[in-house]
Each structure stands twice: as C-alpha cells, then as structure tokens.
Image (cartoon, rainbow, N blue to C red; front, side):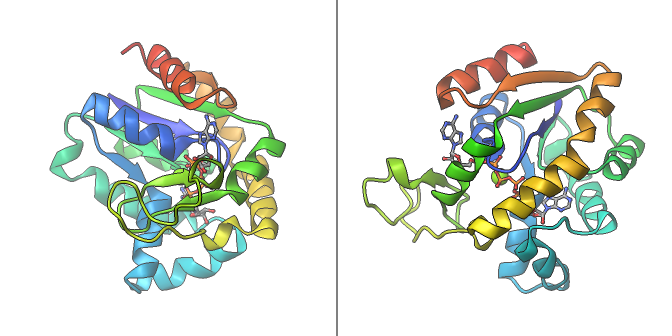
Length: 207
Ligand code: AP5
Ligand code: MG
C-alpha cells in the first residue's frame, strides 16, 4: 500500500507513521527527516535547505521532488511506502502523480492552538528519529530507544512555528481538495489521544 500522511506541523504525522509502518512492514519516508539528516551531514542539499527550514518556509519543490523520486526507486519501496510530509504543494502532488500510484491519503487534522502547544514542547532524537513531548518525559533528556541526547528542533521555536503554520494553510491545505477530488482522502481527528488516533488511521486504511 502506498500512503501519504497529510496534516499541519505537529499533527502527529511522524509519531503515527512510525507505528503504521511497523505494522504494515513498509518504510517511512519523511522529507523533513531526510533534509535534517542532510543538514547534519553538511551535504550540498542540506546546506541549501537549511535557510528555508530555519525560517519555517518550504524547501524548493525541485529539491524535494528529486529526493522523493530517487528514494521511491529503492527496493524497500516495492511492497509499499508511507510518505510523511510529502507532497506539500500542488506542484509536488502533480509531480508525484508522474512517478507513483497513491492508494490512500490520511489527513490528520488538529487545531492551530493545539499545534503550537505540541511543537513548543516537542523533543526529538536526531539519531533514531524518536519523538517526545516534555509533558511525558518526567525530566528525562535522553532517548528511551537509543539513549542519545534529545534536542529541541530549531524550527520548533515560537516564531518559526507560526510561520510554518501559515505556510501550511497557504500552500499545503489545498492538497485536501486535490486528493478529495481523487477520492483518496481519509480524515482523522489528530486531537484525540495517540492510541485512538492510531486506531482511526488503521480503520481509515482498512487494515
Ligand atoms: P517536517 O519535519 O515534515 O515537519 P512538519 O510537517 O512541520 O511536521 P512535524 O514533523 O513538525 O510534525 P508531525 O506531524 O510529524 O508531528 P509529531 O509526530 O512530531 O518538515 C520540516 C521542514 O522541512 C519544513 O518546514 C520544510 O522547511 C521542510 N520540508 C519537509 N518536507 C518538505 C516538502 N515536501 N516540501 C518542502 N519543504 C519540506 O508530533 C508533534 C508533537 O506532538 C510531539 O511532541 C508528539 O509527541 C506530540 N503528539 C503527537 N501526537 C499526539 C497526540 N495524539 N496527542 C498528544 N500529543 C501528540
Ligand atoms: Mg514529523
């Protein structure tokens, strides 16, 4: 099954993608994670992407389209994949249609107010991708899965979060219509607790 997770920053795409991918035995392809790794490794793509990400803006379409096109050619995508955070513009969605056949688009919906609270308290592990919220960490600063130090993402600072939200509404939200027209949208209430949200996603996907 080839699935897209759509939704605003902080909706829980990454959190749910890890569980859904484990369950379905398919790879999670997060363009955000790929770009952050490229920044960490100081590759040319990473250096070019950093200024956009730090401002809460989208990286140019051509850059992310090339990343995803190449990634989907790998063998582990033959039995399906989950795209987390791609596409994010109509142009990216149109490009994707030229090299992929999508079966379902899960739209995880959460109010802006809740998103700001989630993102400002998020802590992540850059080593394994583990995602946490300070409210559940009980003061711990290390990753439960691999023991590495947790950090706050640079783009989770208050002013950048607001800019990411407005970019989402202007550039990514139109994709809900785009995929509704194609009969692919499965809407999920992302404000519910994580387990309920997970169950709703599986039900939406019919698995
Ligand atoms: P990306 O890394 O994709 O960030 P994003 O879309 O802004 O989404 P997030 O990762 O912030 O949120 P999420 O939905 O994964 O939520 P999470 O599960 O972590 O992109 C970063 C940047 O890269 C972009 O701004 C852009 O510059 C660039 N980029 C990436 N893709 C691009 C593309 N296609 N085109 C152009 N540029 C691109 O959860 C958030 C928090 O909430 C966590 O603390 C979590 O523990 C908590 N939480 C999750 N679910 C629940 C729940 N049900 N109840 C309570 N808390 C919850
Ligand atoms: Mg994410």
